[in-house]
Amino acid sequence: MLPGISPATAATTSATKQDPFTLGVASGDPLPDGVVLWTRLAPDPLAPFGGMDQRTYSVQWEIAADERFSRVVQRGTAKAAPEYGHSVHVDVRGLQPARDYYYRFRTGGFISPAARTKTAPAPDQLLPSMTLAVASCQAIWEGWFTAHRDLAARHHDVVLFLGDYIYEFGNDRGVRPGDDDPLRTRQTVTLDEYRQRYAYYKTDPDLQAAHHTAPWIVVFDDHEVVDNWADRYAGSTPPDEFLVRRANAFRAYWENLPLRAPQFPSGPEMQLYRRLRYGRLAEFSMLDTRQYRNDQANGDGVKAPNAATADPSRSILGFPQERWLLDGLTAAQSTWNVLGHQTAITLLDTVSGPGVAVPMDAWDGYSASRDRLLGGIDERGIQNVVSLAGDLHRTVVSDLALDFTDPDSKVVATEFVGTSLTSARDGEDLDAGGRVLLEENPHMKFGNFQRGYISCEITPDRWMSEFRVCDRVTVPDGTVSTRTKLAVESGVAAVQQA
Image 1 (tube, rainbow, N blue to C red):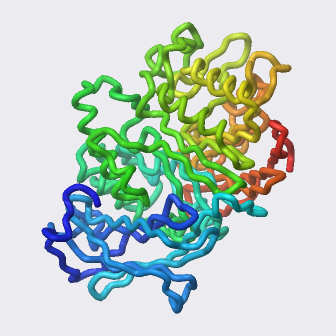
Image 2 (tube, helix red, strand yellow):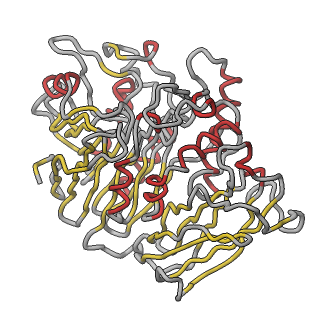
Image 3 (spheres, rainbow, N blue to C red):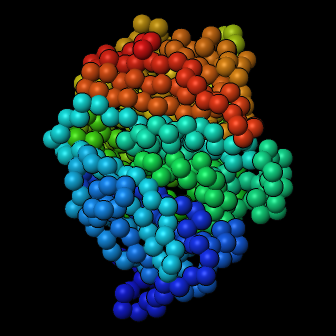
């Protein structure tokens, strides 16, 4: 049980005067026998406290084996307390592995939308195939969530969301009607402001649909807190002041996403990195490249690599997480070893000609961390490592080599960096920056600057990534198509055309 809620002391009621399920429902972090079910009561989602009073409410939930709820397998009652933003997190156990389930909530006379989820396979089960979507970076004022609409229609087994679920800064030049509302344009700092920002996002019907069709596995990046934060540091903000803001951001993040109690933050600390296994087919190591990293080298930005970026005492993961990751990869018994994280591991030389300039905020700014990871994968003989990341607002597909400056260097892993859902607006197939990346980085095999997401199909023999792109996101009726399909064969760390 979470701190602050006691069944013996919490006064509860089930009466609300308006539909409280305006933010939809969600599920996440699937296990072979369970999944987290989520909702948050908010009859007036953009009002203070979501339009709720300061009482604790009883919320009934049920999960069924069929869409009509004629075969309910479990039901119960949870509490929606004001200290948790009236959010509900039900950690259901006792389910069957690799099964579709359907769930919904009820309070008073109101019933939530019904939604689909799916459990992970049993630990010793080898699925013939599974599907997953990879998405990130959804600045709501930059466009419509057309990609989410397409993602929802595909009913993946699981969705990996790799950061920037919300953006903390205000914007008064949005493309959607009503984006000049002061609520949506101010910077989020307090807990109530972060809660309202999530509510603004989660009222979107396409985002709700994406949550309603599959369980999600989520990690945060920077904008869930503030741009390019690192450990205790965020620009010129004093660390003690920033940690108060970080605590508010973490609390709102947990309240608004389907996460378990172990992920509940303790002030400005949150146990985000974790591992989820999909039987013998895939294991997902979900990473945290924000909370434990050293501050960005050379004042951040895009700079030439130097002694600071190569300093072996610096880490993007923190040394305990580095050890946890490599030890977990070594012990894994699944075919595919998947890293779900925030930003590119690959070298990203962004300038033409003999000079080199790389982003200090990505793994380029922590090259010793990268060397330890890729070197450890090689030394320990770990196979079929696939890195999935976001952050760049462009698609970047790369072979991950031990030495990116040597074209003959051994390739030990594959990386698919997915583009943004809306951030950077419409984009184009290949912009000037993308052409430079392809010219200067021979290990990079594909690039694209449109908005979209990655739809993946995994079998014991092959990983296939399909890059779904939007023609436009600045209009509500954009279309989505497949730009290309790329594959990796099991046992061969190299990208090829599917």
